[in-house]
Length: 220
Image 1 (spheres, rainbow, N blue to C red):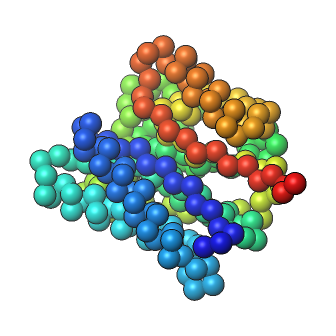
Image 2: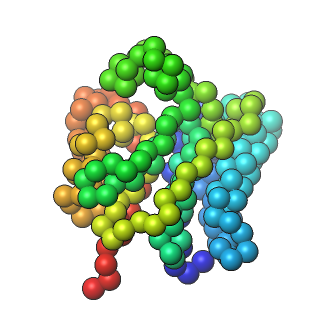
Image 3: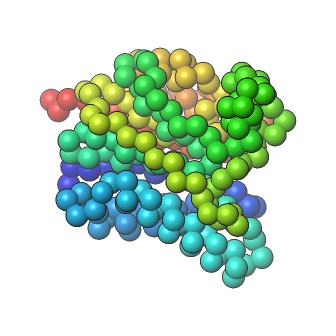
């Protein structure tokens, strides 16, 4: 749909080929549904909801017909022509929204450590180094239906940035660091720096990482 933009990230799990296939299925379904999307006929939130549910069903069917147990996270941001931004996620891939270098919002993971943070058992700082930080409470392809967690910004401003990323990236940064980098550099340069710093800080032990970085810039 002209004037709309969809950024989707999927972080696959379940073995090398199983996880990759699950993530590819998420991206394929998102592309197919977005190509038919007409905002005047379908609410943006409903499109995102369908992407999550149809991806989940497809991954579940793959699991039935193979010996693998594929799963995937999803994090997506949909921007409409009026600058509304709709967000959905399942798992521990995140969507950050920055105004200048300040974080306006971020998604909260469907994970064991996030639940412990919400219950006051551990702090945000302790969550990053927790031995069970990889355990998810919701994702695509699991036996239970995926969580449907939606958010919305009514109107983005020129200069706002949206960062969609997997845990292999955000694990190594504070929100302040992320905001500073995405604001100071052009999106391509900021992406390269984030990837380079994440790999450096992981010291060879990091997870796979993916990101999509968007910024609303004025047309020259």
